[in-house]
Length: 139
Image (cartoon, helix red, strand yellow):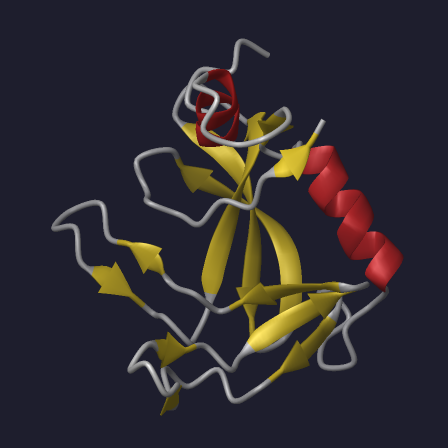
């Protein structure tokens, strides 16, 4: 509610982007997942998984890694972009799975995230020290 720790609000407040942006709430992530429907791969997950979820498999003409694995939730793709390891800072699991932060906390040490993996997407609780991907939404 205070915007503390919300990178989307921070860049909006600094004027670095046009408009007002924020992290989605856990309820918004859950609503998007449910609207996308049950995953064809597992009844506990949502959306449609696409790709191999086996790490990076291609590069584009500019030499940048492409992440071909993603979960489709309605018209939005959530790539298996991995996460930053909190203990040593290395990037881990790109192309295999990922987490997307919400702006909602579950406790003083945990927050809600959207977990993307080969079965689909599901909401998860995660320690706030992890370096997860963010997807901003416009107010």
